[in-house]
Length: 354
View 1 (cartoon, rainbow, N blue to C red):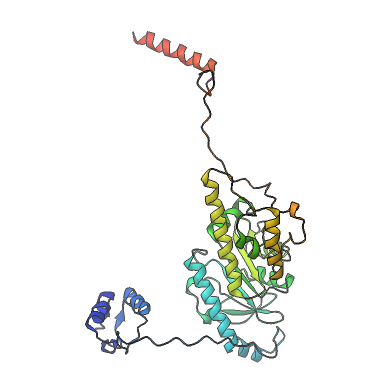
View 2 (cartoon, rainbow, N blue to C red):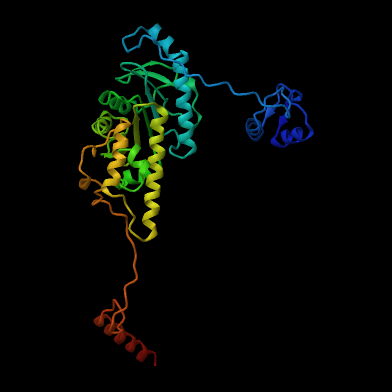
């Protein structure tokens, strides 16, 4: 019978200074034991008191000298899909997926990621796989019409939206879609987050709302693509958020962190019982200059300072207030006729009880 190793067994071996080579090769590790070994960076055959092996330095792999496209041969596309360059991008997609899942920006198998890797081809995540547990082998290669060119698992059902964004915005090298709760709350309410409150949001995000259409349809992708010339982060009504980056997939993911933190902060601020302090037009203009220098789009580029920080449509919710006491001592909010009626009914009830 195979021996089962628990986390307590591992801790006891660590306390006694034993090494993992004593573990049977066919031993079954419980999930907690496996997690503990991973946290301790321990591998079978290495003493627990021995120093951990230094991680290999991450070396960025250059793209192929000759870019590929959907018209390249099947042999070339397969070789490219399995190249060190694509493997590195697949690893990055898995890492971004884990971050999305760990931050609860996705649930079930929701969310998807895509990276442009040629004139009209892109890597993308698979359908029906949790973003927190993807493997490089799960990824797919598609052309810009959504046809799958390589990969064992089927590509994401929402790939058309990513591809339409890339076709409309040539600078978009990576796209990330997910459902962060606070940002999605704004999307469900149909409210664009107010501006002029936090610098990071103003510099790195440019947000708009696309109307709702069924996810995965060309209509949904078209409505989002219509906004990507001037916005890099799109709230999808009653659905979620999608962002694009002209740098890399991690930068597209960063847009999600920035937007979600901002929306959460705005919501908490509205609960403090006072109007939030905002930046001046001059202060925002300084941030927009930084934004423009970074090559990040924003429809406010070129506007005058007096035209900035317009939050006229922002309604921060309902606030309750206790009405002030009337100067004449009467009870506030009472109706004399109603009071008289209550008094008459009460007198009748009392007379009947006698």
